[in-house]
Image 1 (cartoon, rainbow, N blue to C red):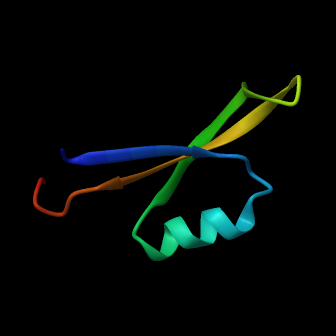
Image 2: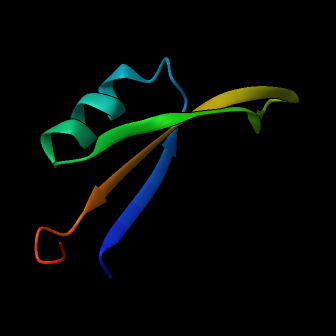
Length: 54
């Protein structure tokens, strides 16, 4: 495994901050892919790559 990806709702700043401290970076936004209580929502795509692979 050389890349770990995650998706977080953009307003979940606590989760985004936690991921950032663990080395994740924001890659982009996927529009209207996450359904939450019947509403389609944007999701911030984040990833962390292994430093062992260049």
